[in-house]
Every structure is written in structure tokens, then in C-alpha cells.
Image (cartoon, rainbow over all chains, first blue to last red; front, side, top):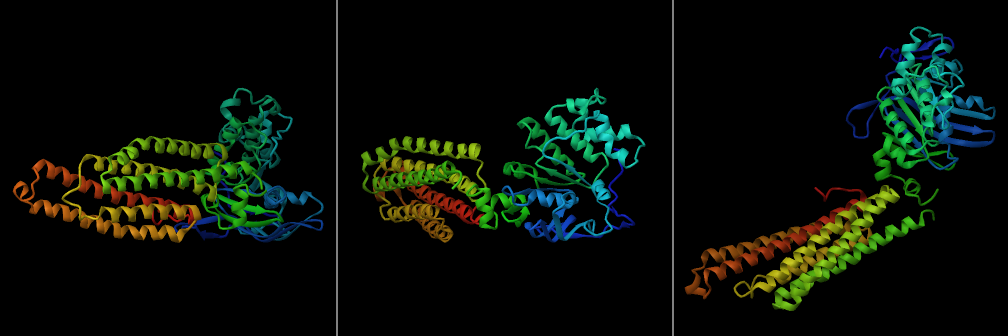
Length: 282
Length: 225
């Protein structure tokens, strides 16, 4: 290994906030599970349009949480709230709290750049930089001034992203020369090289063929051993295959149901969720 | 409504299972009638008709597999497919038990144990299968639980009937008393015990159908175990 272990704290502009002991009981009531992220009464507006309504959700640590729902339901908006990517949209406004390690990420003293070091993101379309494979993966480390042992860290990130074996002889080739599936795994390696605690994935396999998709899905399961993974997907079977928890957002930005994935896909509580996942609407 | 073809396939599956159960109950009633009346032609019809039940079973099994492979049902739809898949197996086995009963009817006359009320037990288990299938058709959890409750009474009657036959055997002084050779008595006793056992098993399959129906309707597995 050799990468720094997650510190469990969030660097703010002027202080380091200690990690609180936030836990909750599992549905089975057996072992308590740690909470990585907690939304409390979270509203998001784009201008006058409300995109998310009073979202309350506790995302467990070290598990895969899938966000599903029809187009326009707010699932990607919620994902982008987690590491404040919505800050980049002028008309976006966020009310309510989103806690990461016990600290509201929307507090004035939180530095979004520092936040994104802890909460990495992978997008729908692979977006490697027009640089070498090595420089793509090292990018985040160098931005953070973590220049020591970069080559070893690059290789470790590529290995964790299940890409090293395929590219170890061409680390100085352009990342753009890789196939679509390899490019996406390169982006995952780039996201995990700085050793975040949380990985956000916005439809990470929707642009890939079935074999590349299968590799990404397998990788997501492996990554959840070290990271908390939150993934938006339009593919319900994919959500069922890869996630531990599933959140169902429905039109109007409402989180209708959030539970163990088995429960959602075998016997959801809400008729609207049942109708959505069985294809009776949407 | 989106996925119309998928919804049609689900409806066709349920209709197919109900149609198969109608045929199976009909076969079971014919086998019981053959036992009662020693109607060899009717018994033969039950035996030869089993092939059609097996074919229908395989068609419905394939329909379930195709729904899973091609439509990826979830939630209540998945439970319908899973329950149907199990229920057709129970129905096919009930049809096999009807064949057994028909074969007992063909083999010999019931003389000594005419008082054992096979007819009544038979009617009750047919009613149980019909009630379980009605619960399946109507998504009726209460009806499914009622079928399971009924089975205790069937078990008691079957046990009591078996005891009667065995006790009679133990107390019989064979040829001199009843005019039956040991072979004939042994054959009649074994036939009676097998008949009782098979009827009791039909009741068990009815409970299985009710259990899968309860799972289908309420995601409740209390009757499965």
C-alpha cells in the first residue's frame, strides 16, 4: 500500500475539524454502522426552481450507495451537493446541512478545494487530461504539493483502479490513447490517487460497452472496501448489482425511499417506488 | 403505461398457472372418482393425461426463465415470477400423485377398507388446492393463511386413517377370518396406506402453494419454513 490512510478529518480554511462519533443502527439492529455523509433538510434551488426538497439521508461509510430515479429527479444534483460542485453553477442555491465527518460542508469556513480532496468525483464521460497516463494520475498529488514518491503512488492508484496491468509499459503515453473503459478507470485512478474518503460517481459506466461496464462494476465493489462510494445510475439492474443501499428520488426532487438495496428491489415500502422500479411509470 | 409487453407477459404467466391448476384439480378429481368407483377407463385417462400436464409445466417454466432473463423483474413482479416458478412445481407433483391414485384404483378392488373415508379426505385436499390457487389469483394473503391452517385437520385425518388400517392388520387372523390370502391383504393394506400418504402430500403441496402466494402478496415467508 503506502498511500496515506484517510485522516478522518476535513481541512477547512482555518482549522481542522475533529471527526465526530456518528453512528446509527443497521436495519437489522445488529452492528452499528458509521455514517460518512448526512444530509439534513437539504433544499437545492436553480433560480426559482426547486431541484431537491428537504432531503434527509445518512450515507454509511465503506459501502456503495446508489442514487436512482427518473431524469430530472435531482439525483445528480444531490451527488454534486456532496462535494459542492453546485458552487460552480451561479444560479444554484443550497439550504440545509450536509455533514461530512460531522462538519457541515456548507459552513462558511469550509474550503471547497480541500473538501474535494476528501471527496473525489468521477463523471459520466471519461475526461482524462491531454497528458500522459502517469501525469493524469499524479495530477491531484502535485496540485496538493505531495510530490514525494509520486511514481509509487501513481502505480498504486492504477493498481487499485484495476488498470496497472494493462498500462504499466506505457505510463508515459497519452491517457487519450486508451479505450473508453480504460480512460474511465484512469479517471478513477486519478480520483483515488490523493486518497479521498468518499468517491462520487455520476453514471460512471453509461458510456461504456458491457465488458468495460462489468469491469467498472467490479471495481466499484472493490473500492468500497476502502472508500465510501456514492453512485448515480440510470441502470436499475446496475444499482441492484453493485450497491448496498439504494436511494430512490422521484420527480420534484423528493427522496421517496432509502433502504438496503435488497429491500428496495424485493419489497419497497412505497407504491411510487414499486411503480418506478417495475417500469409502470417513468 | 410503459413496458406493456412485459406486463402482458406477467399476466399471461399468471393465467397460465391458473389454467394448469384447473387441469391438475380436474385430474385429481378424476383419480378420486376412479378410486371410488373402480373405473378403470377413468384411471387410465388420468395416467395417460399426465404427459399433457408435464408439457404445460415445461412451457410455464420456460416463461418464467424468459421473464427473468429478458425483463429482469423486480419487487412485486419478481415475487410473482418466483412464486409462480415454485407453484408450477407443486402442481406438477400433485398431478403425479393423481397418477399414483389412479394406479391404485386400477390395481385392485377396495374391499376391506371401504369404511376409510378416502372420498372425504380427497374432497378436502382438492378444496385446499383450489383455495390456494384462488388466493394466488386474487393476491389474497388471508386465504393463503387459511389453507395452511386447514392442513392440520387433513394431517389428523390421514394419521387416524393410517392407524385404523395398521391396527386392523395387526388384529386380523387372516384367511380363516376374512377370506383373504396374506398377499392379497398385504396388497390392500399397502395400497390403502399409500393412498392416505399421497392425499396427505397433496395437502402439503397445497400449503406450499399457499406459502408461495403469501410470499408473493406480502413478501412474508412465515409459511415457507
